[in-house]
Length: 260
Image 1 (cartoon, rainbow, N blue to C red):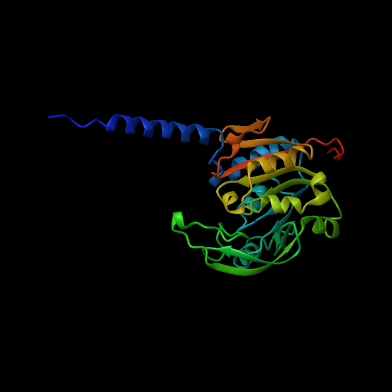
Image 2 (image 1 turned 180 degrees about the horizontal axis):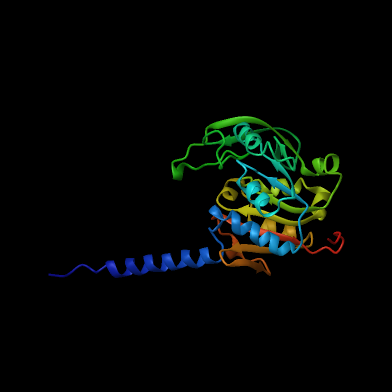
């Protein structure tokens, strides 16, 4: 009687190789961004190498990033942008005693006007100006909320009087590139920009290549935040298109920025 081929050994090898691949990717920051706020801010402050005075938190959610910034920089002025009414109420309660935190109940984009915020539940950290398709995770995206959107350059000009921006953080579930395009002249005044990249960029059809050219052509160096530090990305490779939650830092190399 002829025996069937043993399929167990190859399958075990494939699983081991897959695990090794995931561990290696994580060690280089790919997929590390889901719960790394403390390390993100640590790396940013290390790159700033000076006391930051003004920070912008775009996509504030319930304020965890802002709270971490405040714990490390007691005198930092922070402007938080968040469109979800539920989260705005949480932010107001959380930071009501902090006069250096300004809450702006608005979304940011590359245009100004009305917009729709989509989510699975009100106040979700997955909320996006795009209706994401997450059926493969069993997550419906049926909640909608009418919100207002603006270009950041308009706010920077009218409210911030075109001041230097020491720290900019952008986490808007796939709309990061649209937000950046709305920065206009404010981009040149930004010292350090942290942004998230991941599965939500599949929904908005934006790629790391788009961010690479956007920043490098504007005079920024790019770094990937990893568990052990920030890894400089010297040139674009297609292997950077890893759609797992990853955080990047763009550092402005312009000598035109004022010194501390």
